[in-house]
Image 1 (cartoon, rainbow, N blue to C red):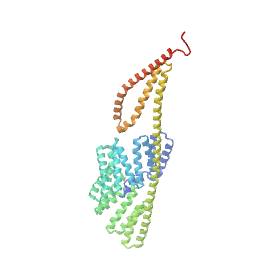
Image 2: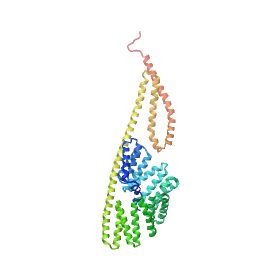
Image 3: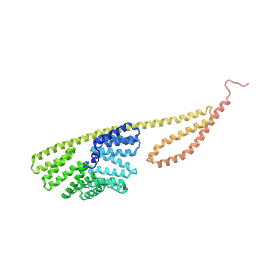
Image 4: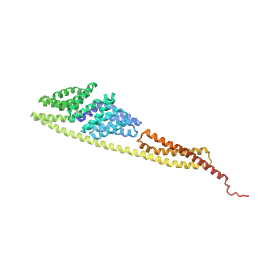
Length: 465
């Protein structure tokens, strides 16, 4: 099967564009009025999901916005969802390395969360990316980890993900030209599809098995599975794989020297690809038909399809250039968004530093004010209150300064942070009380001596008789 059949069809045939428009309008309207950041993140990634099948560049930008906002407010679920949508959009734009990077980031997030289903899904997606990058050993490594995870957790996670993982392992072995292993996994995938009574899965796994039997040169079994797959593929409108099945049948008939049937199914593959705009499917069928007609010396038809194949190659190359341009444009927009986010963070840090500076200036001023108040005629309880407040500000400021360092030291583990602050508190509380008694006592004594000096000092200009 072609690379884009692995994931792209999950989007292309799941939702019709016309049905998407009301959803897009509804989500856009909600997004315009929503004020709560966590809800905005959810609306953004859901909107990105709606655009994915026909405007992956728009989907990519929305997913990036959701990702930046979710990280800003530390919304882990939103970050995980946004990374998945972002990676899928990059995949659809043909940027497999970046898609792989973001799936890896999602995996790191899921490793810290108690969601085996999401963890297994991330592993499966990484396996898909390695298949597309033709790194088959790595693909198998991640796919087997995904498989063992769903086997261990069981339940709905296994029911939901097992088929996809099994089918992808079969696809990997087929690309590695290991037909026996591919056969085993595709047959298992077919069993799961039959158990689920899922027409999409049935058609997909049957095409996989047909391709394996083709690889084994077992034309009878390959033909049987291609024919079995066709009704299911038609039922779910999986016309991309239908093109592949028709072309597979055409090649089998060519090997059997049945020219008419070979040409018939070759034309079917070309026509379905043309009707649905699958340029690479049209190209494959045109190349096959050109060679077919050349073999049987029908040169006008051979030349016609050769011309078509040349034009289709130019179109495919043009589409690849367009996708590359879209990726470059999207990357620049992402870079600008990241720069804007970094500026916002820098501004927040400067604002925090300014606040700390103002607090640092305020505390000595408060002590000076307390000293001044202690020298004027005022109630002792107010002096005591000012002294306590001054010390509280000092100790709380020290805690405020220490918190970021302790958080980094403990890697933001609340239990360790709590223990360290308990130890610090155990040392600071007695010190606070001692300083409080010393300072208040000193302020009251200074006040007493100050007033005593003023009371006993002779008035200016008076003389003894």
